[in-house]
Amino acid sequence: MSILANPLRLIFFFYLFYLYYSYVRPVPVDSTVREVANLISDYGIHFISFFILGALAQLANNKNNDFVFGISLALVTSVFIEFIHFFIPFRDFVMMEGIANIVGCLSAIYLINYYRKNYG
Image 1 (cartoon, rainbow, N blue to C red):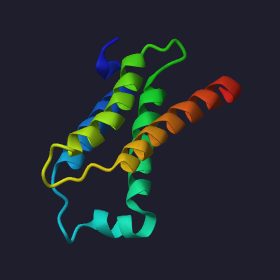
Image 2 (cartoon, one colour):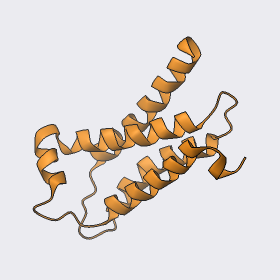
Image 3 (cartoon, rainbow, N blue to C red):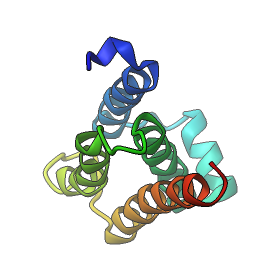
């Protein structure tokens, strides 16, 4: 199946690219992200960002599990992004942010899988 045949897979890959781009660039002092982080915490932003990634990966997957690659890529990305922060000088490596990434991704995958089994 072509990637263009399933629009959710295309959205998944665009969002994945956006996450990589936004998580490796410096955050300006007067950015909206810092204001939101003051409201819901930095961990909340990480959880929500990777919840969306996990949801897109699982929604792009069908009942035959044809897109296991996308789900695996989402989980690996949730760990890899925080690991890469250790080597980027203007980013901080925080283990709790990595855990928030993993929990967000896994919870979206689980919730959509649970919904599909019981209601879909």
